[in-house]
Length: 286
Image (cartoon, rainbow, N blue to C red; front, side):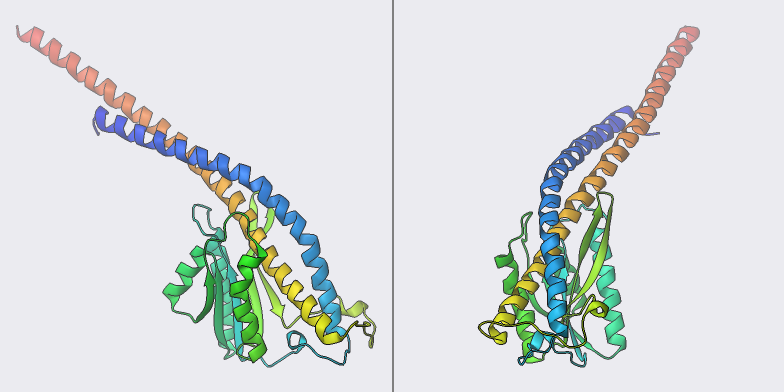
């Protein structure tokens, strides 16, 4: 059995760790509410513009935008959104698992893969795998901005225009509730129609001044909205997962302190009993 001094040192160390995890839990809870609010504001616009762009994909304008053209998928682009920091449970691990499943699926079909990595954790993970990385960005922060994200994403869009990649996916964590976050894989390009059964067979919009100018602008807004949504969803998931993980760590630290306190009491009692036995033995010898 370890000595009382060693046990006291362990108890003090665990209590210090518990204070840190408790503080991180409170900070994550405070940031989580703001992150969830930004996510809720981003979702309606992102969902609606995705439906509208899907309608454009079924229309028949004189100008066919490259983002709407279906090509044989010989090369796949993947945008992976992760966190910059750890201590958020299995959040990043689940996103990476979904990405690896997507990789195996397309590699089995003979397609090449290229990556755009948003977040320090994804950059570190995929660089170790040695996969082709066309662009990367770290330091997204707690409040992502579209202008900061688009620099890296534009590399993938240019590659799609040039024919270097034939399909573009985004993989990010999706917020379900405070306790549940799941990875989501979404095809960005070519645009998919979500409610094609409800549309007429042949129809189109009226474009002013012209279809090329309108589609260029609208499709860029579509890409911006989907990438921004993925980033704010990831931040909301990060804060929720960190709060839950730090609460679990604090609770486990409390249990460990209780166990160590019990061991300390037993060791202290054993030391007292030993001292009493020595005193009694010495008195009997006299």
